[in-house]
Length: 159
Image: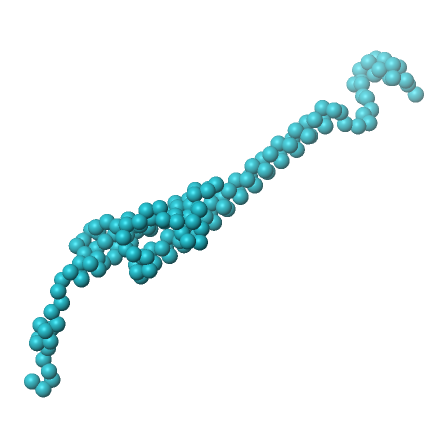
């Protein structure tokens, strides 16, 4: 058997490549594997953060839609007065959720455009708005109703 020097001299004389026996991994390989592992963890952490943020934003947007629809239904049904309101807090969460109501003339006589906006202020800001056209009830109340004219125009079956 050759010792280390004799093996090298024999390999050089016979034009064979020098082979060294490795018993473990080098420090370079350990550092490289560690760098790849840390990079993979950073990418995974960033995608988890992005997914969580998207889930929170989606949940808040859904809540904003439901709150906006319910507030518009309250205004139309008369629970809330049909008058302009701005930045009014919701009763159940006054610190984060607010709503506004704007009223404009509609495209035709006797129509009003109701615009309800809901906003969430916090870590994730969400805004949502709904528009609906309704009849102007004040227009119909201002005209006098003449019941006697409608009664005289009706004919009774015996006449």
